[in-house]
Image: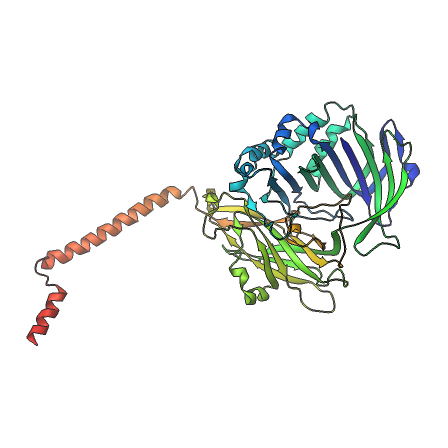
Length: 501
């Protein structure tokens, strides 16, 4: 088992090495402004038997949880996803895709995860373009981290003398992101939690039978840095091995960069049953002039709302909304089914945006047409649905021959990265909510009022009965005046008229 704890500051920040005190496998330091990332790497044979059996059904499994609270991301922790619970999965055997084992395990670890098995509840990802995509995708807007926290306390803290272990597990509720990754090649599970850029105390404790590495780092730009590389410098120490921290400096290629701009998202009023999401971007200028770049928005839409791929295939319509094209949408998307009969989690789509062509950078908007499904009846006649913010980024092509090997902070299997080539660099735009403090929008949807539903069936039956009675009354009135036998047919009248001629 290996553990890595990293405090990352912005460029220009620094910490005096003498302020870091190491004693008895414990590192203490001052309070600093930094982001924090904790990564625990566990070999599969160190896991409980139940988890070993579960992972035996997967060729790869990647869970990405992103907080709905806005946060500031700093270099090199820049990769973003829409807020919520994301899962990317490739079964070891195709038969595993129809098994409920994975969904049952997810419910035990993350509370109420609404899935039955990957074949019915997940959507498939395209694997014909680039081989680094998983086979299935699942998304849910919120999950309960409490069972995971209790499991971490039971399995990781029970044999530890560190009193702060349980407190660290409880802090997962404040994390901006939580990643759990496994692949059959490495035979290891990586758990990574990230906390946003804020004031926090430098503290770390080693645990028995665990190699714990601690770094206090900041982004740097040495003179030899290539355009596609990021520089890092700072202090590193291995608890229980080093007596004092040692200086370090290194660089690595990264596919995720900071566009140094922001965006917001809200629905045009009135929303109706066909709401339009307006994206307002702070800057229309590409993040780099050395490569071709185009802005994109990646959506994970719950099954309560969807986009119509036929509507988004009209070039003139797209141009009127400052959209270039629909690059991808998951299939199938039933345009008519109500929400309560849909088994799949929803749909994902990738839209290329069309910024205005101006020499100067300026704010601009793009509009995304969406459609609501019919929802289950509810008290009061209205139901609220949450629509998460998309991930917005500029996709830029790196120079020919540029390679992006794995780096210490790389994050892959994000859903959209598999839709681009391996030389694509993602310049992320920071989401900032227009109202409130959550990266989601609320729509109030009219539904059948359960308090009045009993009148619907009775009223419908009464209307049908009255209509039938009115028709019978009219027919009886006609028959009572002239009788059925005395009514000559129209055809007979026509024949008689022709004979008289």
